[in-house]
Image (tube, rainbow, N blue to C red; front, side, top):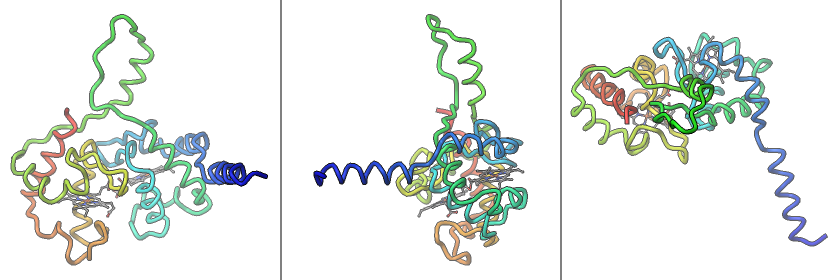
Length: 219
Ligand code: HEC
Ligand code: HEC
């Protein structure tokens, strides 16, 4: 066989074998939806975080941490046992959820092509984090200096480094994670737990940071 053709065949084969199956991922997501919502929009003011829009590789990593209990997540224990969520399913469901797009606001109505059903579907994919009051300027300053390089200038995360979004994520959930980083029960970006940047911040600084994040998804 022509070597070029060989190369193409091998490439096709490996991509078929390694490609995540989005249909299976969508089926598995029906289990997750019980808590995280059909469109992975989260709920109960952040008791269940938003998953839509998180990088797939980040979700895979956290699911493996839940499995091995490196990151404790009691409600999810029954769902991350090897029998319930083998590696293949973990990859498929993460890949599927990463494709779900949410909107912070609805696009203006197109009078000419108005479709009530499509509009209804869109409205279910709406997530705009409730604005909390605070010193937005102080929050912005801290965010830009200490967080933006990894989490993105607009807080929407970075695909390349698999860094999670912070803007568009529920405030309560973010605060709970920051407290876990401070206590050392979760480790932030390969830091030493004892040297976490979050230990340096006062509750007021963190409040202002979260207030700023709560308005970042508005535009
Ligand atoms: C019984 C409720 C429940 C079910 C079902 C559930 N989760 Fe969760 N999940 C949670 C809770 C609660 C958290 C937040 C844990 C915390 O506060 O640290 C979470 C967190 C996560 C996170 C971490 C998000 C982040 O930003 O770090 C991922 C990823 C996740 N879940 C994926 C899934 C997937 C995939 C499924 C389906 C296979 C699923 N969950 C099913 C309750 C649930
Ligand atoms: C050097 C890169 C880097 C910097 C700087 C950084 N982060 Fe992170 N952050 C990460 C990575 C990577 C993760 C994902 C996994 C982990 O480490 O927990 C993360 C996770 C988080 C999470 C948990 C998100 C979730 O969905 O569970 C929060 C909250 C967070 N960071 C807040 C911040 C804040 C606030 C700052 C600035 C004070 C900041 N980070 C600075 C890389 C960084």
